[in-house]
Image 1 (cartoon, rainbow, N blue to C red):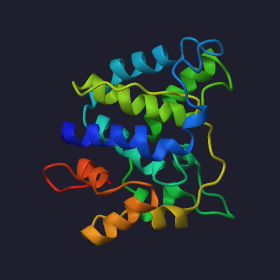
Image 2 (spheres, rainbow, N blue to C red):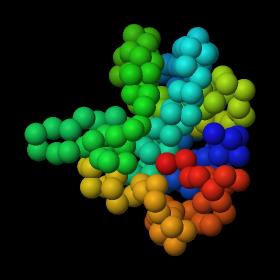
Image 3 (cartoon, one colour):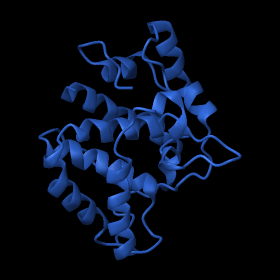
Length: 196
């Protein structure tokens, strides 16, 4: 995956999808409640991503898939129940990887500051730090996201563009997220492959 894709995703996170919750996001949100949070994430990623560098793209994709359904709320991490099939089990997400990596980071943060750092923030920070760890660009990640409690496979099907989408269909998917042709172009990059 080229850095052009990453930069496009950064723009979308900053201007599009995250705009839904931007009022509560800020730099240093955990400064008092869990001051080591971002350092713990960064150190874990730096220690482990070199063992599987391709996981960096997978973690960025996980973040993308989470954000395209209900905003960046970690609803992609929720498991299905007998009453509800969750996003994780929806066809667009069956090839998403990195759940165990996120779980391991969450375990470390729970040891340091139980019940403080949201999974949604962990996903955003891990996505950024993993790309940086393999030589990609750095971007500022404001934090303070809240974890969602609703996860429906039908919403993933309705919001994540299928890989066979034509330009008209892709524009419709992106438009529903408040994104435009420029955002679609940035995510598609020079190869024409959307990172979905």
